[in-house]
Length: 158
Image (cartoon, rainbow, N blue to C red):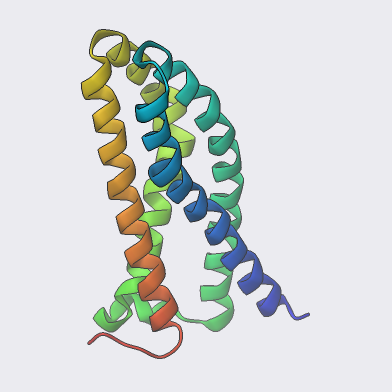
């Protein structure tokens, strides 16, 4: 297997694990918590489950980022970032950057403690905000994945 094929395989596997996890949290875990877990236990349960996902997401975003940048380097595809028709390249970098900053900087340094403090004070509004944020991130991610899949197979929007 060539370095290019390995990088592409790692990139796709990383995206599947990472965005699939975001879809699970958004579409399965959060609704189940709302429907089946006592509100006072909801935050602690969510924290326990999502901390496991966060570890996995850190690894998969690293693999996705490293392999993605390597693919751009290997293909010498830097000029795509200057073309609007390759909007999905910009979207991939933007979504990756959002998640990377959230997972490696904002969450461990500030967000985790802020979330717990706010949830103790205002549980339901805090949980709704978490749900909305996950929906936003999932929609952005899925639009990006769809655009990248179509664009990398020749469909250019503009």
